[in-house]
Amino acid sequence: MRRAQPDPDPVRGPSLTFASLVGGSASVAPAFAHGILGGESDAGGSLSWFYGAMALAVLAVFVLRKRIGGGRSPERRELKRRLGDLERALAYREAQLRSAEDYPHECGRTAPQRRALLDSTASIRHQIDETRAALTTPAPG
Image 1 (cartoon, rainbow, N blue to C red):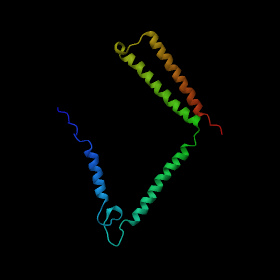
Image 2 (cartoon, rainbow, N blue to C red):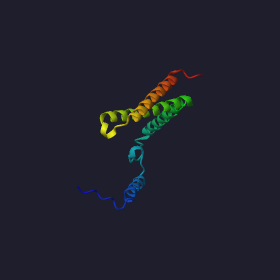
Image 3 (cartoon, rainbow, N blue to C red):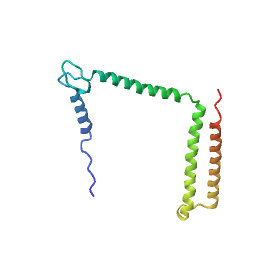
Image 4 (tube, helix red, strand yellow):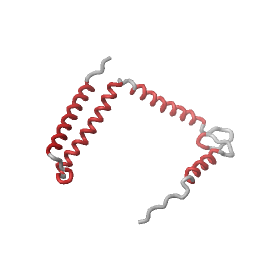
């Protein structure tokens, strides 16, 4: 199976795209919305109002999400971040324990290593429970 040879001129692709965009925008006749060439009437005049309204709606969604998401306190955001980190760490340690059980010769651990991993897993579970309890309590204020 032959490997594809890289393009000898990596600049050709972007420059060709840029040239086609410039060439398409430099039209010789007057154009209206949707690229319809016309004389007296603007076939897409009402569509430009629609596009403007859609752009404002998208902008409003971003502003509202920022405003709604900004209502959470930094402490609660930090607790949610910490909870995610702890859950990832727990999943990693549980995967290590499963691998050691499934493949004892390849991933086997000594008894002290296994005990330390089990203690670490129990500690992380306890921290997750504490963090979840802190998140379920109502925020002051």
